Length: 277
Picture (spheres, rainbow, N blue to C red):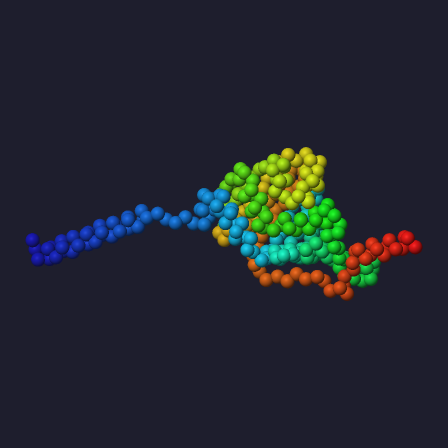
């Protein structure tokens, strides 16, 4: 064997041994079990993931909501912020089918509605109308405020968690955020059992009047175990989609200044006094 061939063979043998050794290490590492991603866990552990979403979202202080849909054949939309403390506070701008916007603030059971400029002559130029719904009965008062309360994202998760038959649709992107999509179609009676008792009868009557037999509920949860979108399809009665963004962003929702606020109860009392004199 020539002088140069022997060192070459030694070098090749050494390199071959190194390569085999390296392959062995790589093979061993690749065989180690990989930890599932959050999205994979959301898809594989439905009940556990929804419970974790409840626990996580229940600690939320505030959220921005965007609601779009149809009700009674008319398109509606609403956007604003919820302060999820106690009492619940909301500052929302609603847009009807004609494009007319109305700003509503809610602090507990007290609702402040912004009066259109052309209608302020009846309120002495005051910009806001105050209505304390706590004294108007369950149908009018509690029912109205519950509409805002039910936009609370944790309520969406609790509803889905409580209803049997929820399934995973798969991974989907909502407004650029990776999520897992859940869905369930449920009889009206099952859905009614999950909503507030104060609204149960009137909701049942409204659904029955439209011939609605079942409802479809959808929920999209992100990698932080927070809802990003919720959907409710109610057949002929309508449908609603709520998008959730800006969790825990600092918000301040306060009652409008008293000097700019007319009290609906006092106005009614004034009209009653006029009719009795």
